Length: 239
Ligand code: SAH
Image (tube, rainbow, N blue to C red; front, side, top):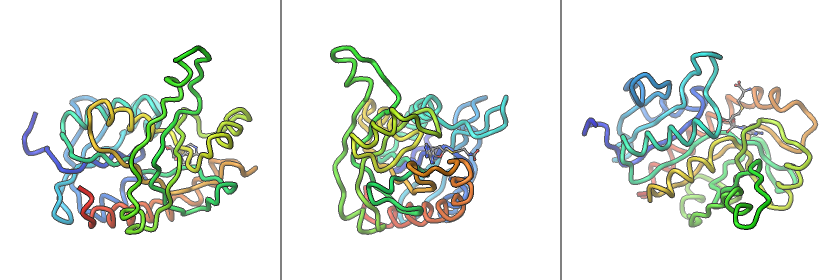
């Protein structure tokens, strides 16, 4: 391990496009792969009197797209925590929002509860284990610093949603649907690392519109807002 890589704060971002406005805003520099021969990429720097590292999932060598999703999220979080040894891990990204919960495109959330909505193990004990609920303390001072709402973020392996999953979201009052946060929260908990997630809404889950169209149309605006929210968070006494 290289001592120079250690940072106060590790920002975990799935997509390169989500990360770029943040990398620019914080003035981070590329530091190669997170781990030799592995696609995840590392950026390092300092801002607002904190040393900062940022990891992205990288590009899949077979399919030439961002390596989104829960499997990569868990592995990148684990590798990042062990290389960077952060005092705080921040998962920053876009999410689906819910009109029925008061959500709108561009809303910023600091969720306090994380679940998996597509892990089903209908057996005693395993049912709760599969849903994987993790709660973290609400930080109202951080929410007001960045104009964020509290909520529940549910993670799964698909961009679209099945009717059963829509019922799950309603039952659990889910405000953010994504493909990484609960995995990163699990990695943080297992390594006793302080964790928060910042999510910005790119699409409305209950909408009839094709999710990919809505996502792509709102992506630039949402990621600019995400970069501003993370920059403002790092200006606070978050650590
Ligand atoms: N069509 C996009 C695919 C990425 S969308 C592209 O190729 O550019 C999925 C990413 O955005 C995931 O990392 C996820 O965390 C987040 N996300 C945004 N809206 C989502 C939604 N409605 N459901 C699940 N994940 C969503």
